[in-house]
Image (tube, rainbow, N blue to C red):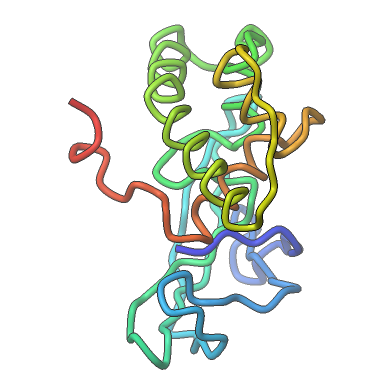
Length: 180
């Protein structure tokens, strides 16, 4: 999968309930770093916004011409394998779950998911910083604080962190292999 940050959401011509993602950046294969990806189709991806409304986002399926792997091109408003938009997940993690229209059990699951994934995200960001010879002092704060030191504290920090981790092929694809 590939996360893009420059895109437009365009209402679908055939179904006004669907939004098509029109990428404005060149996607690169996260496995072999090839720049030649062929569009082989699309698929619908459902997500819930902060009002609890169901959005249908049409994402592209791409095949790498070198390694032949298939990737889904997700806009950065989505977190892989999650039902809520990244802004909703971010609000819950920051303790603003009362602003999101979702059940308490969903808030609990989102917090539990982030607690498990935060160390992995922080480790991936630390690894990327080390590859670039950048040293970021994380201090003795929380894992969330360390992540926001890497990607910035302004709104959208989760989308930025997830984009880096996914596009460097460090995202965990099978949740059951990771969670025990």
